[in-house]
Length: 428
Image (cartoon, rainbow, N blue to C red; front, side, top):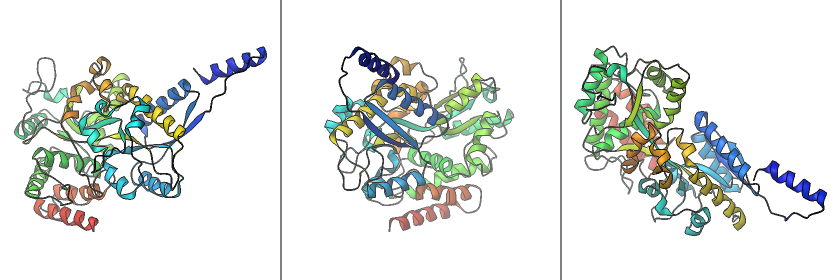
């Protein structure tokens, strides 16, 4: 029932002298960090929820993504001035637990939301738990980097099948053959990603490391344990080779790396699923001069896996105060509704973490999401460490050490040794 409709009924009832049953409206204060297309879609979901729930109203605020958001969460939780509900990256779960800003999500909470742990992909659910198995967040999506491709540069090669879909990339050698074929067909930067930025560099590096079975930080806090340092060197050498061959852009920041692909200069783009709306909007408006697709990152090394993270729902600590049970029930009602309407969030390129939506007929026909949704089962999340995850020292090391190394400013061996030393120093 919409608020306007409720008001009209109330007015009619008042004129007729009929009493209306009273209800206690709950206001759920909400913080998120969504901008761009994500922000538009989230605001639409909030508006729809509010229209359908006159008894529970979301009062939303969007804050700056990254360090500013998590800093504000920490300071507000300490003094009891935080929101009732917030979005949270699961890669920052270790930080949240160390700071003591997250409250456990109980089985009773999930029940109030109409949810259960079995409703979620195991990879995202595990990332939402603490070391002891306690749930501290409810996953909303799985977002990863995928391989976008421009069909123009692959025409006449073995890398397009009869339906114009990407095929034949089953190893690093295959991928590099495709890059050279694209270069021969006139691609200015056969593969583009943010080579001068933290996120783009880190996610490609971490994927190549993980596909070798390497570990950046072990569960007991060891940086590059065992032979992982050698595997990290190998990952960096691959990225350096792409630079040396002229296949990837020179120190490209995020926006420039995206522009290389959308303007038709790159055959491939290694970037997040969140750029799917950009591609669809350009295509819809007639501003895209080529046919494109997007697939799960191929198995380039030993294992099929890809860096991934999740946006999730979390309930922060409120200083020394306990949340009123009725308010908490309202918060869980919001979470449950959002999960069950996640198909609208999937329109932003994400994979729903809530399996009933991810496995629905509607999602199965949503392209290119359905094509790369297989990555949900094999995703590798960031290490469970306070120095890893979004806006962390690990990301800083990617920008300050790995990126310069692949541009020739220091050797892969020296760079990985510096990464190891840098991350270890942040743990002390």
